[in-house]
Length: 204
Image (cartoon, rainbow, N blue to C red):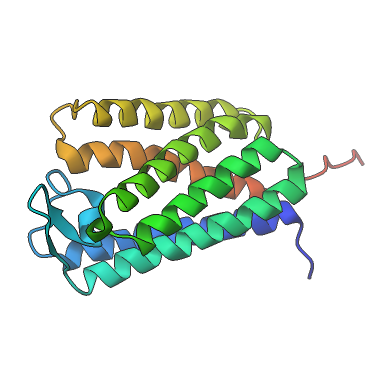
């Protein structure tokens, strides 16, 4: 059976996002005393204290978290190729490609790498939010409007996070307010792609 490029892209996104969400929970559960409010998300891969630079790697949480991010990033990068093939929206495809590249980098370069890790994290957050917004050119109503809202929410939360306004949620809670909107968008968009664009049934 041959699948269209858009359905391949949707399947890749769905698998990548689903495994990351599930393994993120597993990583948190296996990390002793992990706080979704006070710990950064990336602490699951390696917990470093600044400015001292002392780092702690908790296994198997670190391996599970970093591996799931690498898998997510690779699948998102591949999906960008199929999205371009399906829709020819170069800007959108590039945004998805960069988001996947960033996620792979976060997994390959944990907090122990310092500024490199931070740079990849920001690449992921920024371009995933922008990709959600730009997907309005492909998706249909009401998903296109929801995508704009979710992408914008993620970017606004990123600005708040960078400026130190965590809204009482802690650094980890605020990071999740950046991440969760685009994860929700990604799952919805993947479902939209997999469902395809069915032809209207002709009247009998």
